[in-house]
Length: 332
Image 1 (cartoon, rainbow, N blue to C red):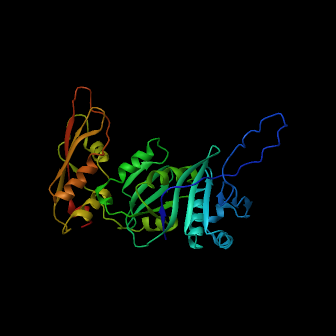
Image 2: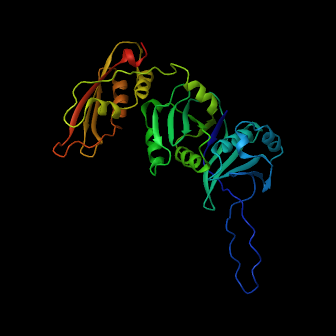
Image 3: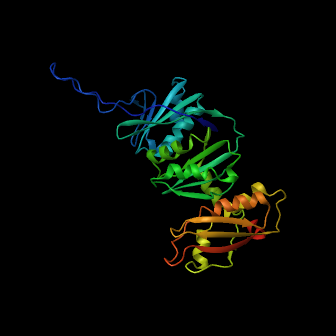
């Protein structure tokens, strides 16, 4: 099931303020969030301000009771959720709305009593190639629908939005038309908002993933071949081979470069990666050689994302080289 994302509405439950004395100007209510639509909080699920008697924690496992209620909801409905609501319950509610034939769902988060727009969601073609977005513990992991995650970000990092948009520039994500989101039980509404809000402007289509199914698939061997044999050929002063190896791009991501751009993928070939490490630990220049030009450029893009401890003060920069043979990169 796919859903399209674009721009959106508000969320929350306003409280009625007591009538002020006639000579006292009326104060605004503590929340101006619209009560209409579906609201998921940490403890309740409400439709047009009335509790449905469904515990949010139960939605991820069984949304049949919610679906029955939603069949009677208007065609255009807003889905609002509080920052402390279980993200899995919000995703389940979204599933329920789409499955019961609602052509558009406006998503918004209530944070500190204010409605913050997230996305507008509508159904989209199921064959769209999707970015896989997983909210897992304290991190966000990105990959493709049929492979393990290859890029990782700290979920609550203050710069998360910019980092996720940078990740979307990965060369092997160039054919994406959708995103698939899955969340673990620890994620909350504010986490979901930050991730979807960051990606909505770049991806127009979304679908909801089954986190338990993803967990099961991750335990299966070989969904994406991994190279375990990166060889650091010439580390220079200040960085030992293990440190440099750790700072190099995810090896699964390197393999995605090979799978995406190699005209005739096969077991032969060695990529040589060269990087210059600047005084602040960032990579100032990166290159990759040995494979087809498009594959080299993709891997160089990944290498340039590396972050290391700064080299010793006396070193202007460090130049180091590592090799990875595509025979092991491709599981042979």
